Image 1 (cartoon, rainbow, N blue to C red):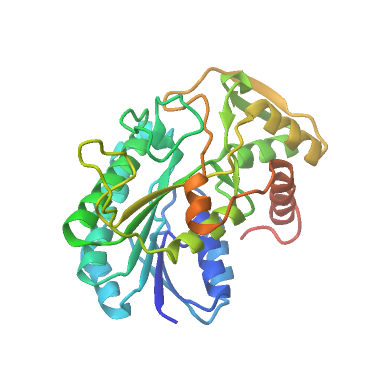
Image 2 (cartoon, rainbow, N blue to C red):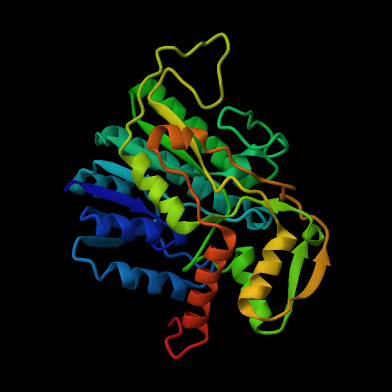
Length: 341
């Protein structure tokens, strides 16, 4: 099997993607800088799971380090690259903008250059539903305009899509951008709402509910995200010879370039999410209702027609099923003798 690079392998999505690829017998090289954006103990616990696989090789590295990254590409000659390394979080970008430029722009530039120079067959990279910004037409289509981001995080991901297109156009690098919609599930990030709500409800502390719960999100379970990534990985983008340069569409190109929404195609009200969580945990939430936060959007909902057409796969895990699995994991790892260390 050919070597696959997964950047951000100690992260939430990166760990699950790496594990799936390893179970499929791929050779996986994982890199991560193990930064302290959130509890590093959780990242190390994820890595311990991956290190049980013989075909997994971990390297501590920041993708902004161009020289060391080039050495890894030269050594392993990757067939596929899945770039999931990024500074995440909308609200964190309001206070720490430089972190996003360094990782999401400088780091991604290095990934593009190395993928070009060392003949990577297919580069996949994480984008986000946040790129739709002020667009309120739903469901979101890949060809909808994404010119009005409301956070630097979203702007950096929009920049990634444009940077990737330039490399696809100039050098024929095959790239696929993956617009993830509110990913959740076991081993999730502590800064995400579902994780924070679960923790606070179990500890009988107030949960902070933005816009008083009157907002909607397309919650997408992690297993569906991973299945979509692995399926898209095997579909190499092709040049679109029918591309009309007089009427260009956002996600279409004459270059070997693709953009995919990966979501559950269900806009769930935050209030309803909290009610499901209360039912699963068996405790009532103590709420602190707050106004909409800067950088937030009112609603997200994905159209996944393109994903279905290209891969035959549609994310389908319903929210109650996914929340049950997440809460079960959370209780096991934070409220049992086997706590994260």
